Amino acid sequence: MNEKELINRLEDIEWEDFEVKEAKTKVPKSIWGTVSAFSNTAGDAPSRYNYRLPPEENIYNYYFSIFERIFKKIEIPFKLKGTFRDENQPQVGALREALVNLVMHTDYFSSAKPRVRVFLDRIEFFNPGSLPKDIEYILKEDFSMPRNPVIARIFRIIKLSETIGSGFHKMINGWETHYSIKPEISCDFDFYKIVFRFKDGGINGGINGGINLLFEFIKNNPGKRTPHFENAMKTPGKTVEKWIKKLKSMGKIEFKGSKKTGGYYIKE
Image (cartoon, rainbow, N blue to C red; front, side, top):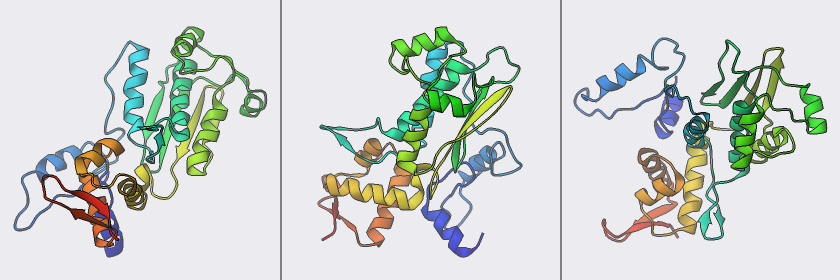
């Protein structure tokens, strides 16, 4: 890693393979917890997972537990639908459909296990069990034949799945609408996998996507403070602070008012 790459990483968000601790005169005590955590993730030897959900017999509950974590890993630009933030955007629908698809079509008698993996540049859904038809035929005819019809019925009742169609068009079109990249679908006689890749910056769009998103948010919501950005944008406060620092150094925003009641505004 050269100097420029290091500076870019310091300004970006922290992730499973990158952690920063401030140190002025000595090694901070908090670093040892980080070293311990890294021994189980991507900071030392190659690892399999840095987080796994505990076993859960209730598939319905498991779906929402998984989706809650996935939801936080994708870029969701701030948009209003009426007077509320629109979080049901195409890229969100694509991942929701992929997870429903996994739960409905997994071969639960297979020795392999269904798997969702989140990387810096992509999210993968692995389904034990093959597709009922070639993917070309499924897309052309909008063919649907759930491997687990009872599970499929549950998700249709709660309106997370449609009664007609495979859902692949929603996955493909939804992801491509936002990221301009089509999901990659591969399969064999005993599995199929769907890969959703990010474009330019990975999860949350990196520093450039983040500061642009925050800039637009401040422009549309002047006078707000960091906690408001954190809640509205569903982004950790530490990351928001880095975006604010970057925007201030670029001369794009400024803080007006007292420390208790003031907020950020677009700089004229």
